[in-house]
Image (cartoon, rainbow, N blue to C red):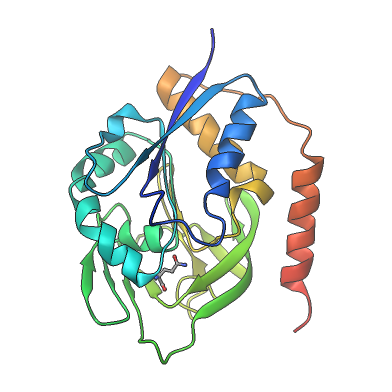
Length: 246
Ligand code: GLN
């Protein structure tokens, strides 16, 4: 039986900064290296798409201007995406995409951009005079140690009971105050980590692939381990850079 995964990449044209498209490449590479047929379909603003046609959804980051261009369109798919997540669909939403998977994002001009409320959180941009949260980040998560790069103006606050993706060991995370980073709901992950995230964090990539296959096949799935020398070296190097004395 040939295994197959259908990856949906939301707003790949507007929401793609700091190498986010690399997350698609990492998923494709780790699927194909195991003989899993994987294909990607992008969905742009104004295009109808049905989340149930996919096994895994990705959304990258973007500056406030891009977020203003896609927020209303994303609303049209909110209910279907929430239903798919409640049914166990894996999602990776990064930075500006992560913010729009929350309840709302108050942008750098004070505009209230509605979110699709997959995560119970709100984000507020303190205004363009305030410092951005920029730099290398190390996060301790249930999936292990994760490393990446953050660059965001918005500060995100999780509602009581909303699980974070992890705890910041180095970096600013959601709001530079409470030590949380990102958010998690079932197999859906929201994070501020760019870089791109997945190439140097193979444990997160394999988590998304495994959960997508388990949901598709309705049974537990063991993924064949891959060689990963380059991934581990990139991960270790990024950790060393992030943890360097400042
Ligand atoms: N525009 C958002 C912010 O500044 C997200 C930025 C991003 O995706 N890198 O917070």
